[in-house]
Length: 265
Image (tube, rainbow, N blue to C red):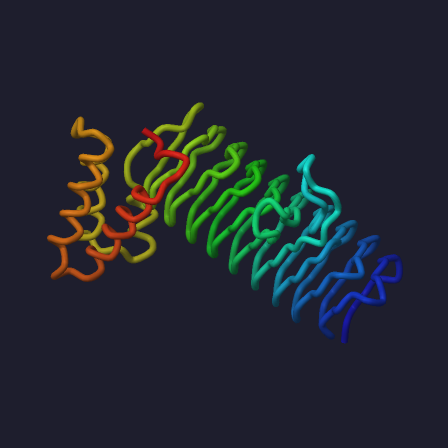
């Protein structure tokens, strides 16, 4: 049975699963859908065309599905789609998309989003990410699976953060971070492969060693960007007998080859 506190305001048109909990003074708008097992704490506002999956937790004073902070926005019905089992802590703000992009902000599954985080319009957030407190993500940013965003970090619009990458605390990111790489500083620069994170996620020592070598080629060997791409592509081809290593080297190459913002250097 849905448990809605008497002081909460839930629009009659909202679609709320039968076991959702909604705390005191929270407000749920007419175009909101909330999946089974989700819990909304007190003073949280969920509005806009927002679809939320199963077993999500929203802490006090979260502001979800608000209009994008984009001066070109004219009230068009854009969306926010949130997956399953995400934890979204106090005072987090997540906005809907804009017509200048595909009109959808997306959050995947199993993400841990700490207090005071801002995720702007049209962001595409993967699964199993961590956003530490006060991470501020501008519009049109993509954060891939398993990435970690440090506390008080800021990310420029249209930047991409690769899978298993890590951005250090109080960093300013204005270019893409390749997969598996640690970056930090103002402005953020590369600081090696996320070795400990990869070990925790079951990467073999052979794969980690190969990724460290690819990092060396890109950042330490004095090659031009184009020369480094060629060498990393050769490494991926030469690793064909080790499928896992070849896959990760290919992902590393594909990311840097497709970058439109430029890779941190």
